[in-house]
Length: 177
Image (cartoon, rainbow, N blue to C red; front, side, top):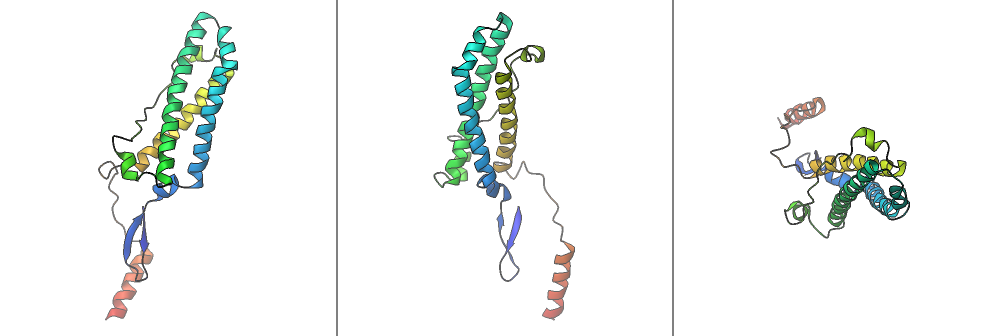
């Protein structure tokens, strides 16, 4: 967090860079990416993916089913979190309301459901979607932890005075005398 100074050089309310980030164009791009991934995955799983799954041997077919369920669950969490943050950004909810147990989206890091060798035998499109969703999920979990970190979970930073601020303080003291 940075500090905002008023006209007298006094510190006022801290600026949350994380909250600024959550309401920025970067969030808009993440929102678009996430919702696009949801649509793309749904279209694949209901179309070409269904056809590809029918042609797989038993082991790979079971792995396909497990990966597609895991992908769907992961994307539901991602979409829920993105929609909640958009509601906060648009003023429909406060950050405190979004953090409450009633609204909070519980994000859980999910791994692939299949062993690496079996995963490599699945259709390329499913693998691409699954890996993309894992990367997006990791970014969202990181951002969620930054946004909703409590003071107890943030390591204490020692307050250091910058050399410029120290010089300004000496000048104020000199002119005050």
